[in-house]
Amino acid sequence: NAGVTQTPKFRVLKTGQSMTLLCAQDMNHEYMYWYRQDPGMGLRLIHYSVGEGTTAKGEVPDGYNVSRLKKQNFLLGLESAAPSQTSVYFCASSLASGRAVSYEQYFGPGTRLTVT
Amino acid sequence: QKEVEQDPGPLSVPEGAIVSLNCTYSNSAFQYFMWYRQYSRKGPELLMYTYSSGNKEDGRFTAQVDKSSKYISLFIRDSQPSDSATYLCAFDTGGFKTIFGAGTRLFVKA
Image 1 (cartoon, rainbow over the protein chains, first blue to last red):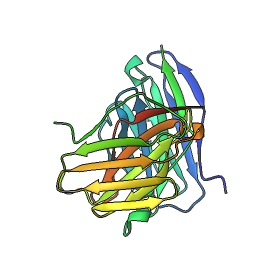
Image 2 (tube, rainbow over the protein chains, first blue to last red):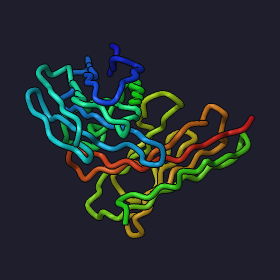
Image 3 (cartoon, one colour):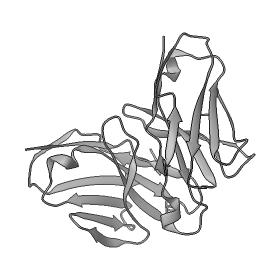
Image 4 (cartoon, one colour):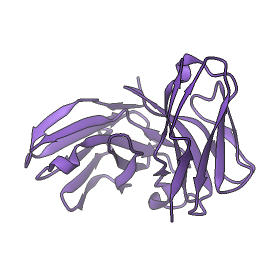
């Protein structure tokens, strides 16, 4: 049981380049999330998904796109990278809602992205 | 006013000390109150959660919620160097989105 995995772990991009971050979970969770974490800002929600084939915008969605074609995978795309997107990106997943313990989010190890 | 306020620290204490970490919040709709722990270069992991005012204990950790003051705390007794991490408070309205505090960095010196 690997939990939540993220690919790649590190990446350096030049301004204007594109890339896709891959998140995979093997816990059969319905909900998946993409966050970015910046010093002093905490975790900010970029996009999330409440099920296969559905996505929704979070707090800071501009410059990012997502897709959830399979329940276990959640992709985050940067179409034209900007230095402001330098950050640590975390993917998380959780069970469907209903009880407090279901709100527990399981996080991946993160992807460190630098845009020069 | 930010929805969640958390002192970023860093907080440095000697081994064995009692640590108090705190967050304030403004959204009365928050129903679930959580603390996540994040070690350096790792993802956060849930440490404790509660959905009511009062105290909840788990070993050396106690989570306290005061809904009337919109204030939550995490106490760590007999702190250990292995407790050195960033602690994030987190809040949920009962839906599927969680609001995280910025995190407090804790260093426990041996």
